[in-house]
Amino acid sequence: MSYDATTRQRADMYGTNKLKIGLFAANLSSGRTPTTVPERWSGSWEDNLALARLADREGLDFLLPLSRWKGYAGETNYQGSGFETFTWATGLLASTQRITVFATVLAPLFNPILASKLCATADQIGGGRFGLNMVVGWNEDEFSMFGVPLAGHDTRYNYAKEWMDIAKLAWSDVETFDFDGQFFKISDARLNPKPAGVGRPLIMNAAASDVGREFAIKNCDALFIMASRTSDAETAKRVDQIQALASDQQRDLGVYTVGGITCRPTRKEAEEYFNYAAYECADLEAVEELMRLQKVTRAGVGDDEFERQRKLYCLGYSGLPMIGTPDDIADQLVGLSEAGLSGIGVSFINYLNELPYFCEEVLPRLERKGLRSPVSERLLVG
Image (cartoon, rainbow, N blue to C red; front, side, top):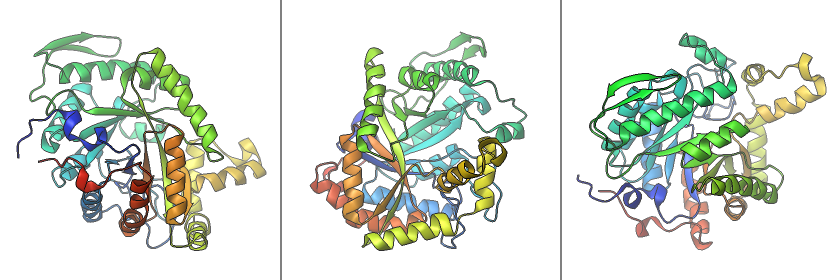
């Protein structure tokens, strides 16, 4: 297979879909919902491979993993089994044709020269379809596994800036380079082969703080934000704020969000299943461990606030809950697009069981609404 088009021409992440749709965190057991239901996501390689091929065939735009190194205990050890994301991405790129596949890197745990080589290798295998989700980390328990201290918040982003500068130098046309920074002293560095095609991998970041957003705007191609759970108008305000900051920096930035989908033929079926899986069968021990790591305790916030937040944490990292019929889900996605979002990474209780219905019923509705084009009309890689 040969590739002679530029990265932007051949990758669907740069394609014609107004609203990009991808799958988030399928590399981890239980995905993004701490539930005990027996049909919860296995996270096995066999299921991941089948899911990636299905998503590729049905025209989804990307696969985005979470970087997780230990689970949250509980009955299910929520997210306790998971694939390292560079290896996972490379295996899936070799097994698909069109879809963009990301790795998620905790920058303080990966040397940037090593990471740039991993990225270039994956991008060569995928013919320009690799993307990098670069994060600075927050979970001190995971950093302790590596014997790496968790630096202060702003320091982590200063470190990330040097890390990113080094990776971009490695991907550039320069043959060798030195780097003399606060965190890295590098001599006679080189990288060959470079990423496939023209340019470098797409870079994403998720940040909520002012410092994190500033880093993403200056250094990345896309930023994940939390969509409002109350109104699309509030989401639009958040997007507008990000885009105004990006405009000030003369940057073209994609703004994405994340959501969890429960789609059924009737709204009643969807709501009943969501309540059953997310609340009635919640792995509360895992939920409370996740809360502890975020420093949310009964002693600290009081019983009423603890119970309120525990219900929110039962959704894990699922972001915006989208629950209802295919029409309901399509309308919610249209609303997010109209709010200015470029795309969304979605999760399901069981991705492989639920994605076919989503593709069969929701995607055609989005095509009719002008948000996505049929797979047959898009450029296939190869």
